[in-house]
Image (cartoon, rainbow, N blue to C red):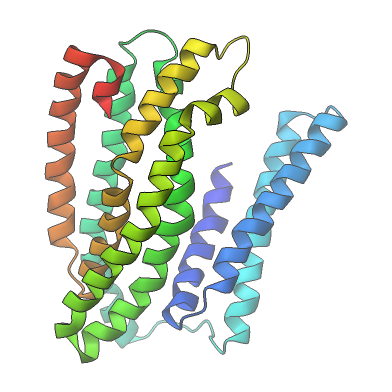
Length: 276
């Protein structure tokens, strides 16, 4: 599956070029196509009792399809692949200087998630799975709205920063309003239905009613921070639109350290909910 990274990385770079000219359809539709292909391939493997190795090659094929879809539209938009020259090498160097702090910041987030799971591993069996299941439900509103909205705003913020940087405060306030109007009702609804969500989708011999109740509490705690998680993505994109990557990276590292300390304290006093 390591080859899958090659195709996904190429698709992400081309998607960035398309989003820079306010074209968001292909990056969005490609994920839908990928999901349809994956579900169909899972059914084929299950129905015909195919090996997991076959599914692995299916996944690599999906990555190739994803890359080809982006390349085709890339050319249709008038872009081309060219040999590098002196100016492009200089621009690449400038991009890498901004990329390295972002890489460190994203690495801190991944390390933080790993630490959360490592701490949860000292709790009763199944605690890590409960965290993963509950965060999976949080990712639904977070991915559908927050990630999509922040992706669209990044290109807009970049344009605004070039001709009217003083209006960034206005757009930040309006973005906060929109995020609040969407995430608040979504959070209230999901908190109200949290127990029913797990009862309907996961209740089984191994995922008992006690697990449903625990997951319901964890999901409610996660959702209480949905607005802040969503709004954080908007704020980060304002920094990136202003070509500032060091500040959000330092904030991420500091917050990761604080989160780890609070996790240890929280798990000592209240158990698994303390990780959240």
